[in-house]
Image (cartoon, rainbow, N blue to C red; front, side, top):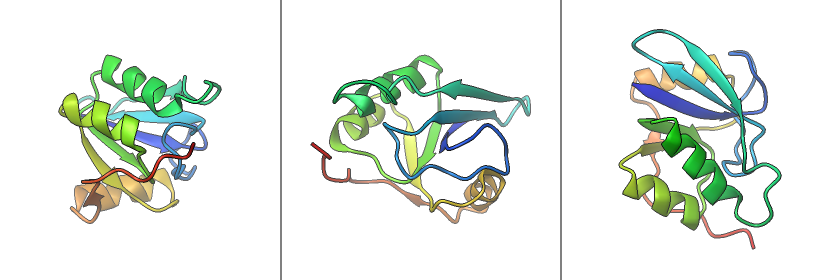
Length: 117
C-alpha cells in the first residue's frame, strides 16, 4: 500500500502540512517495501488549481491513502473518484502520523473543506 502525506519537509521528523494543494512536499510511504519517496508538490506554485494539480500528481503515483489536514472540493472529488481514501491529521511529526494511522486513530475525510477562492 502507498500512503501519501502532505509534509513541510523530507524527513520522518518533519511535520504534516495542513494544506493539501499548497503543501511543499508529499512523502510517499510504501508499506510493503518500506521505501519512502519524497516528491515536490506540483500544486504548490500553480495558479488557482493547486488541489487539482496535487490530486492528479498523486493519482499518477498510484497512491492508496492520503493523509493531510484539509481537502478542498476539487481535490476531494478527484481523490474520491480515483478510489483513494483520505484521512485527516493535525500538524504532528510524520512518524507520529503513520503511527496514528496504523492504530486506526485518524478520521476519514468524508466531506471537503470549503474552497479557498
